[in-house]
Image 1 (cartoon, rainbow, N blue to C red):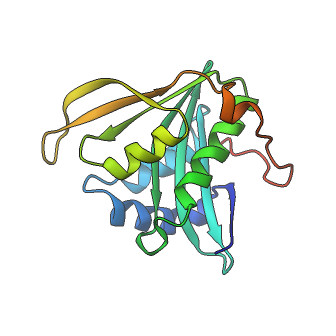
Image 2 (image 1 turned 135 degrees about the vertical axis):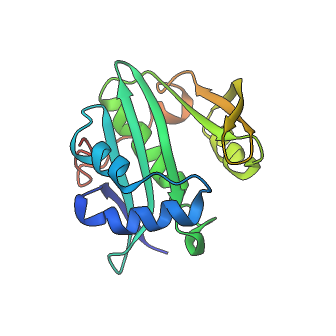
Length: 168
């Protein structure tokens, strides 16, 4: 399957929101995505676009000083386990590194073992827990940190020049 990672635009919002709603029991409201895309200078918003032009994945990252925070990431259900989320994650972290990020962190549901496994693959480790973080079922959030975006995997990765900048 072919797809590309590119900067999110307001034209993508309807599809991004549909992916978010299909992926999470507590989806973001449309105004939150719009704010991240148009008004939050710390936000870097990305989508994965399939060959047909459809958005098949999305990621929002906040770049705060030298830290990258993965705020949300999701793939359209029928495209899961095909490398879309991995490519979004790696691409976003490479660009964040190129903008000065040294570390990255995120929260993930305690029961989302597949996502935790993907994050570990790229060097994230569990560094804490937020008890009862998710209000829909009182599930804990696992805090995961990637201590160095200059580490083994990311040190050798270059951002392809055709991707452009994903800042809002």
